[in-house]
Length: 325
Image 1 (cartoon, rainbow, N blue to C red):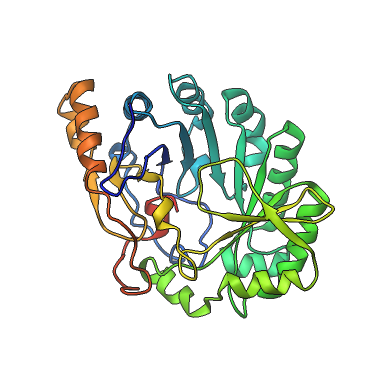
Image 2: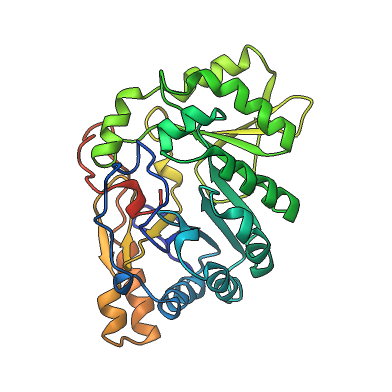
């Protein structure tokens, strides 16, 4: 069995947001004083999350990524990870994190069945990190080193490149990933919510960054396992792979294989559109597993063909943290 949207795309990947809360305030994601979070009572319980992901698994979904906000803010996350990893059909369980809490959770997450990590890191300079995130860089670096010691592989560094903010660190980040055996992924800013629309004024095309790197390194075609949208190159003579996530300069909608489930049980069918399908009221009304699967099919039947970030940059008003990126 499989979920196929109206445009012939197989939906095999769910990005599962377990909380809309975060312990950082990245300037392109969430306003500094923002406090309008969902209450924990509005979040899906672990039982409800396991039930929804189990239904996705029966319908052919193979990849689950735990996201937030910051997923490690959710208490007992390794216990949830272990439950999801044990579900029939789920072959790949990964985590996106800012790594501030990763040092103390890395061993438990690894034991629970999480194998791959994406870590947000936009700068290697402590003062600049504080300016971008209002947080402390050393906590992130400690988390990364703990994950490396636990044997997570691959560990992908996600860097949102912003003109005049951190675009002068592109080569430094390449060196950092070469040193530690990490994969590097550059991401273009996206106009999501008030903060994203403000940050988009710092937009820089990653085609420019790729040309810049090609002047310094020999870049070969590369691939990476995973269901995400990055297009990869490999630095010749090394194991380093560099991915480019380009929702604006070179969109990847034709191969979109994913949907996003927010912490409150809303299924978002496209990051750049408002199409959504609320599951929490259905779950708490007592629908059967068969009915749940029918609702998932009905939701996927409404998945739009593509985002409209360029045509309608102010269309999506929700913050990135609400849907886990």
